[in-house]
Length: 293
Image: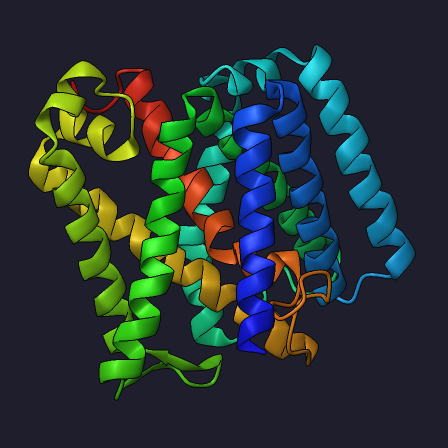
């Protein structure tokens, strides 16, 4: 099982990085679109939506997304690195992850239930994630990778800290394996990552927008940058927990079977789907000059 997980992860990362650096921009944007459409399909299935409805919505997601990349000014602007045109959707996603999701986890109930409201919310959050990924990629591959690092370091540090020191359950009714010690490990891991990267002063001076850490540091200063990294890390935990809650409500172990040893696409990008819209909402506020300097 572990070998299968490692091999699957290696193949997926190889393909993603190959597309990211070798494919034309539109090709990588469409790949991100397909990934999010599969995650949307799996999310809707967890909400007990009929399979044919999920297939149609996922198909429309791809078709409308491709048309948007070619013709919609707001999506084209996002792909160029500016999220100002889609800011309302970012704000909606941020409010959901910061305010509604913690409440839903505490109540052990999905936002909007399994009916139309919950389905519309799932679709909106998937669209917001795709647009946020487009914007991050439009700001540069290094910037996109820096946001991904927040998710990956949080997940890895939480895993090892939880295994080594985990004693106090975080949300046993939702995800019994997660502990408060794991959360602390995730926070410390990303703080160390941020401090390590911003200590590379020459790189920051040459390209202050080259990573999310550099942008936050130059716009907000050290203390607020670290506060933002802590907030984003906690949002990552919320994304992971909320997907676990949806699976528990649906009575399934995984969101899908497309990735051997890992489950579904939604299983692998749950934290990412929370982190990217919130992070790019913050970045867009800095781009527009509403926060920072």
